[in-house]
Image (cartoon, rainbow, N blue to C red; front, top):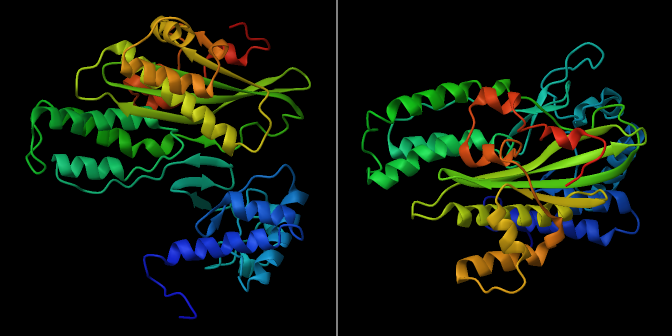
Length: 374
């Protein structure tokens, strides 16, 4: 067979391999475009951030030339900067159904991996249209699964929804059995909150416009657990030449606590493992120098586990301490008061209003100070 079929199970993988192979073959001739295709493409969509408008224009031109070498047409371009879109032929832009006057019209919203991206304001949001599903265990799971949040911007809100089907499972409720009367108000409140999710807006860029040259970048990871769930959240703390500080939520994870009874210290340790693994992922994915990393927990027991040098633990604890110490150093772990710990929201949940009004998105206040003293 000389060609690949459309619709075959292997077709997406073959197409993706061909694109990456093309980038590797012309790495010396098109270094920037090759790196863009290899690291910043998800299937057939590319998403990248560059420091300047000129670099964006050069990357577009170089990437198109690279794709031409493989007889591929790279098009459907979009950008938060109008001058970048101005440099692209209108037929090659993402919006081609009608003319777009970049000097007058507001730029449209594009979807980036399931998240709504407002080009005009350069922010992420969620455009949610809840589907009508029966109030059963199956229907509830379907609605919750339809909310795609890979970065974890609204992880505490999703956690509150996930706790409902877990409670149904714990009670032995069947997949298509009606929702018990005591849980029905909780589910209705969550659905009402879901419709308000489009009010949440998250800046795409980790630093505000005009922030200036960054001299230091730090990653701060927070972990916490409760009898409802456990999780972690990571923040990028940037400091410029003038000593100005800015913090942004980079990644978060919130998981429901297992139905099998487990002690809070063990859940806290599991949350610390999530934070350590998030650190590994972010170090690999963030294409910027990270000058320091800090890990924060409000559990003195977890800190004792991590700093232990002599005592032998049970298998559960020993395995998780080993994972943490493989990826982090005990000196990186510090104590934080529960009232300041933003990961507390990842373990207990939040409603939509509190997502924007608490320290969940900006991080704790002490991160915004010029100097941090763990």
